[in-house]
Every structure is written in structure tokens, then in C-alpha cells.
Amino acid sequence: MTSILIKEKVLEENRRVHALENKLYLPRHPEQTNFFQEGIVETTLDQICSQLNPNAKILDLGCGTGYLLLRFLRRGFHVTGVDLSSEMVQVLKNSISENEKERARLEVGDVESYIEENIKKFDLVVFSAVMHHLFDYELVLKEACQRVNSGTKILIFFEPLKQKVNPSIRYGLHRCLSWLDEKFYQVEMGIRNIPLLEDEYHHSDYQRQFGGIDPDIIEKIFLNEKCSIEKVEKYCARRSGVNAWLANRILKTQNTFNILAEKI
Ligand SMILES: C[S@@+](CC[C@H](N)C(=O)[O-])C[C@H]1O[C@@H](n2cnc3c(N)ncnc32)[C@H](O)[C@@H]1O
Image (tube, rainbow, N blue to C red; front, top):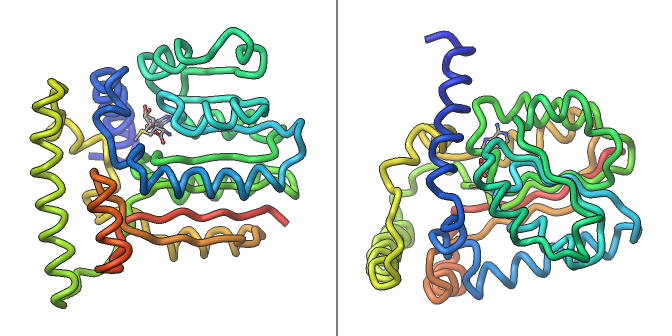
């Protein structure tokens, strides 16, 4: 299959799967909302927002149902959200209160096309849990870095960390905790009557077949494109907050990363 056909297939799968995710997206992904991850999100946002001008304009690429976009909006910023899925965007639209609407702009579209045309006017560009859905995340990031103005920040958040399989006891325990975490999750979703989409993700989470996203590649792109790296954070996300706490505080393992950079 040619790369154009594969790219089209990845886009099509993302539209299909996220139409199914819809308003159940965040309830189905407690790894983004449990107390441990909540601490990471809020600390990251506090740190970034303290460096932004109050009139700053923020672009959230692949904004989904507004995981980060709604938080920026509630902190008083002007935000633009772009997402491929009209269903996800509709859920987000319904979550924005009347008094926040004038500071929010939402568009349905592909991140790559949006970057080509519109990225210049933003002070912060966010990619949250979207890079691993892209056919060519390296190209998208390079284009974003080349098109933003000097001083613009780029946040890459909550991406699956590509890493080597490690034959240690600690890694074995990491896999056991992951297994247990999934079992608890399946029971919890059953009790809450939330249907799972496990088999649906295969083609939409395109980069997972290659093991996730390599933060070293991201750092290299930032440096080549004249962006300074302000923060690299690696940690272990889990469905349950208690399991995330155990993984990070006791096992000290990693499967997720965040990177903040600024165009020089
Ligand atoms: C895992 S969700 C993350 C949503 C949100 N950013 C968050 O952190 O919760 C990935 C989102 O990226 C969107 N997406 C996937 N590929 C995209 C593309 N090429 N252009 C725009 N959005 C895309 C999906 O529709 C979905 O809403």
C-alpha cells in the first residue's frame, strides 16, 4: 500500500473510532483523569500558564472532548481546538459554558492541513495524546516548529513512550501491574456499564504498532528546528490512580511522556 493510502486509512480509522468514543471518551480513559494524572496535568498547566501573557492564544491540535482545552478556557485564555472527529468536537461544544463561548473556537479538520495554514497566530500549541494517532508525527512536528513564531511554546503531552523491552524483575513487575490494572479497569467499566472498544483502536492508534512515540526523536526535531527544550517528563500512567502511584513511587517505571519546548 502506498503511504498516501495508508495515511488516508489512518485518518478514516480515527474518524470511525472517535465517532464511537464520543461522549464516553473520558469515562473510558480513567488514566487521564485519576488523581495521579490529575496532579501531573494541573502542575504542567500551572507552570505553562504562569509563563503566558493573559491574552495569549492557545491552539489544541486533536483536542478531542477538551481534556486540556477546557482547562485553558477556565483559566481565562483564548483557545482554538481542532479535531478530525465531528462527534468529539460536538461533545466539547456542549461542555463549553455560555460565558466561555466567545473565547473558544472549534474546527473539524486534520492537524496537518491546519498547521500549514493557520499556526502562526498562536502563543502555545498543544498536542495532547494525538501524536500516536498520526501517520507521520515527525513530519507534523517539523512543520509545526517551522511555522510558529519565535517565542511560541509547544507542548507534547500524554504520549505513549517507546522503550526497549527490559528483562529485569522490575520490568516483570511493571508488566504484572499493567495486567492487574487492565483487569480492575474491565471490572470497573462493567459495573459502570461503559462498553469497551479494545479491538477498535488498532489502526487509529497507528504509532502503537511501532511501540509508541520516541521522545529522543521529538527532542532531536526540536533541536534541529531551533526550539529550546524546557521540560521533559517521563512517568507511568495507569488506569487507576493507586496503580499509577505504585508504578511511579515504588517500581519507578515509565510508559508515558510530556515535553515542553519553545521556538527560539
Ligand atoms: C486520544 S484522543 C486525545 C484527545 C485529547 N487531546 C485528550 O488529550 O484527551 C485523540 C484525538 O485526536 C484526534 N485525531 C486523530 N488524528 C487526527 C488528525 N489527523 N487531525 C486531527 N485530529 C486527529 C481524534 O479524533 C481524537 O479526538
